[in-house]
Amino acid sequence: MARTPENGEEAVLRRSLLLYLEAEGECRGMTDLFYPDTGQAKVAEKEAKRVCSSCGVRPDCLAYALDYEEGHGIWGGYGERARRRIAKKIRAGTMTIEDALR
Image (cartoon, rainbow, N blue to C red; front, top):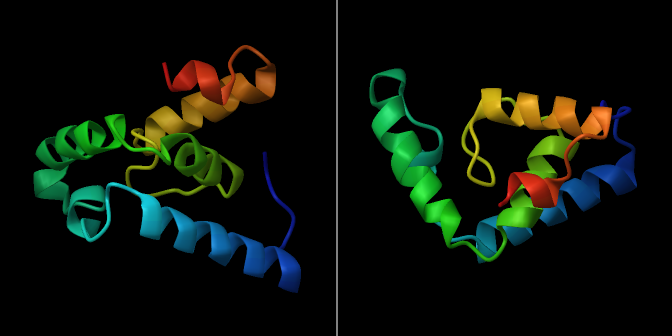
């Protein structure tokens, strides 16, 4: 899933996808919840995952985070470690994004 450096069109596409997720996601305005300080991480992560569970753009959000190897925050209902495990399974062909969202 490692991506090559972005050209101009790729950078515009990435920014457009991010703007779409920010505008349509249930997480609008909840940056602190999805990027918590270390001391509040467990509580915030649980609440962030609850918000994600009913979000209409959750599949797109998780796909974005996996495609662009987002290293921080909660994306599509998953933290960094879980996304790394999902990405590894997708690369191995033993999981799909749809499987991860069940």
